[in-house]
Amino acid sequence: MKISKKYRMPCVVYSGATSLEGQFSGVRVDSGSICLDMSRMNQILEIHEADSDLVCQPGACWTDINDTLSDKGIPLFFPLDPAPTATIGGMLSTGCSGTNAVRYGTGKAEWFLNATVVLPSGEVIKTRRRARKSSAGFDTTKLFIGAEGTLGIVTEVTIRLTPVLPTTVAMVHFPDVGKAAEAVREALLAGVGIQCAELMDDIAMATINKYGQAGGDWPEKDTLIFKFQGPNNESLQESGRIVKKIVTKHGGFGFKFAKDDKEAEDLWDTRKNALYAGLASVPGSRSWSTDVCVPVSKLPELVYETKKDLQSSGLKGFIGGHVGDGNFHSLLLIKTEEDLEIAKKLVAKMVHKAIALDGTYTGEHGVGIGKKEYLVEELGEGTVELMKTVKKAIDPLGLLNPGKLYPDEVVAKTKD
Image: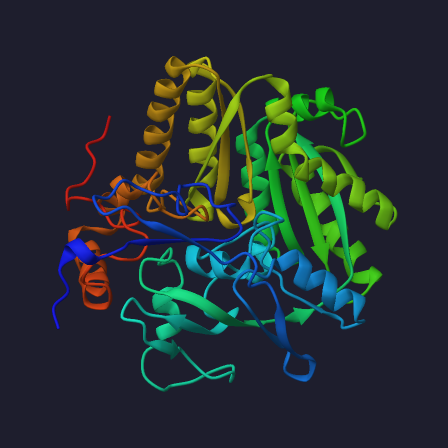
């Protein structure tokens, strides 16, 4: 039976509300829309320690999952680590990432083993069984990863867990951001146990010092923070020695290797406090946090050019992010409408440069409303049309999360 469009009621799914490109925001539609809040569907349903996996509802927060595993004495954790309050359903739907991506990768089907999904028709499907691998047709779990809630409503997910290993942290400073990016690239090629490689530029470090919540009076220079992982302390020490030699060759100085777990935690808090320090540095401002990702070999060029663009714009802000996998963020602080227009041009310039370097305009924030205009430029008209064809086949009435992900017109945005 064909349903008239006048009877449709679009639905926007809401859960952790941490995505940055408007994925959970309502959009204007003639018939109105409803918001489906999944945040109370937050239960861990099954823990399979012997299989290193766990079944949970979509509103379960990854930090709560890891806390529960720790409290139960289970030496496993879920390594994908976006915003601390992000939920599993949203993490799957946006193809999430985080600081651990250098070691553990991003939110793809290796970590989301299967999902139970309600389709727009009302039919309930399960994408796979719990086995680690399968050749039973194409991987339908991946169909919903990164679909941003436009193809179905996730109601249950099986996630893969991994062993908890000893870690420690080191910090090192550089004369410029290009040297820091080059050092990361060489350190990764050395094959040592690097779990995270985070960048904060000189402005970020100055802002953190002023904020005063992370401890220390750090050199206000472009800075890398490494998190090392290994089976024992000896392996961590060896990783530290190798990386210290590499970063020194690239002009790194003040290499600080945490002497104990407390100091490691304090060093890592420096990175975690960067956003809050930025907001505090310009009272009354709001932030535009955006990201791009390029092949690691292209990262120094893009970071250096973006840094110059930011400095010449007159806006307050800084660069930081997960440079170990070619991904970095720019935090732009905005107070006026004029600032907003400048920020839009900066973001567009960053996007075009990243795509020109065979990268992506969104490393981990997703597409949502904010970046869908660039999808054709990155993927091409044929790929975008294929995505739209899948959307129309599964959701012909456009009921789920309308106005997100898919460009309104198959026309690439003109470069500014």
